[in-house]
Length: 469
Image 1: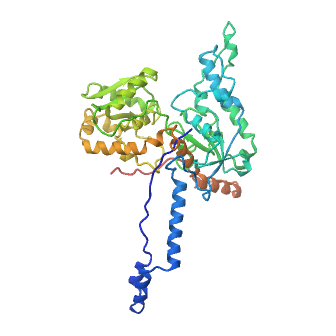
Image 2: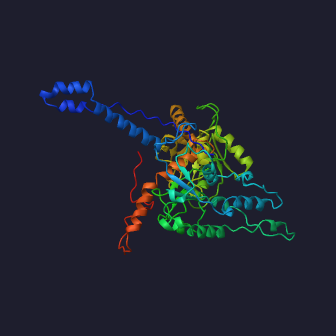
C-alpha cells in the first residue's frame, strides 16, 4: 500500500573508446587505428555492451520503478527482509487501545483486517507493515523472506508513534472503562525491547541489522540507547544525540501529509496570496521563532498566517490556503521538521523553510534547492526582509519551482504504489554495506581503551560549515 512512481531516465552518452587511442598511435599504425575506429572490434563492442548493462542494472537497483506494473529484474538481487511476528499487543493491539481510550463503548472488529490505523502524520509505521504483508511484492526494492536465516535485515513493526499518543484508560466507577486495560507507553517500550533482546537474531549481530521505526520525535525515547545499533527510521534528529542516530546509519522519513494533494496545473492563476502559514503559534525550543514570525507577518499584505491546531476544519482551511498561495512558510516546530512542509509540497506551494537544523528525506535523489527556498533564522526575523525576498522571485522562477515540486511529489505520497514506501525501502537497503562492515568489524575487535574518539564513530555532528552559494 505504498507508492512509487520514479521516472528518472538515464541516457548514457555514446562510447568511443578507441578514439583517444587513435590519436596516440604512431604513424605506422594510423591506418589500422582508423579502420578500428570506423569498424570496432567484436571485443570492443562486447565491452561497451557490458558497461551499458552494468549501468542499467545498477541504475534499476538504486532507482525506484517508473511503473507499478514493472517488476524488479530477477537478475538483480533484492535485499531480503524478515518481518518479525510480534505479539499482537505491539501492532493491532495498539490500535485497539487507541480506539477504546476514546470510546470505551465501541464495538471492535473481530478481524484485524477490519482494524484501520487512525490517520495522523506519523503513519509510516502502518504503511511499511501493510506493504510487507502484501502478497505481490515484485515491484518492491526489498524481498520479504519467511526464513530469518535468509534475511539481510529484520524489521520490527511496533506502532511506536501511535503508542505514544494512546491515552491511559482507567476503569470508571461504572466498570465500563474496565474493557480497556490501562495503557502505558513506557511499559510498552520496555516490553518490546525485552522481547527483541530475547531473539536469537538480535543477539547474533547486536541488532545492527534490525530496523526500528520511531517517526514521532518522542517515540521509543526510553529505550533508544538499547536499540541505537539498529537502523532507525526517524523524522529528524531533533531529540536524538549524535551517538544515537546519524545520516550514515539511519533514514529520514517524510511525515504523512494531512491535506489533500493539489490536482490542478502548474501556474500562478488562483494563487493570489503571497505566503501562507497555519499552525500552532507557540512552540518550544527552536519553534519559538514562530511567535516572532507571527508578529512580523500578520499585518503584511497578501500574507496569511493563522494559529490553529489539528482538526478537520483546520485541515480544510489549510488545504484552501496552500492551494491558493505561491509560497508556504515552514518554520521549525518543537523539533526542526513538521508535517506542513510535506503538505506544501503536495500542494505545489513553494516551501519557505526557516529551520536551521532541519534534515530532509531522500536527499540523495531530491535537490531541495530546486523546490524550496531556505532562509536562515537571523534573516527571517528581520522585519520586512522575508516578504521582500519573496516578492522579488519572478513568475518564471515560481513556475520552475512548481514544476520541480510536481516531479518529486510522488516521493511524499504514502498511498502511491511507486511512492514513499518504495523509497524508504531503497534508503534502508543502501545501509547494508555499512551494516555488514560493522558486523564483521565487531566480530574481530578486542576490548580496548581509547584515549581519543573511536574512529568508527558514525555520529551526525560535523566540524565545518559549507558556505551557501
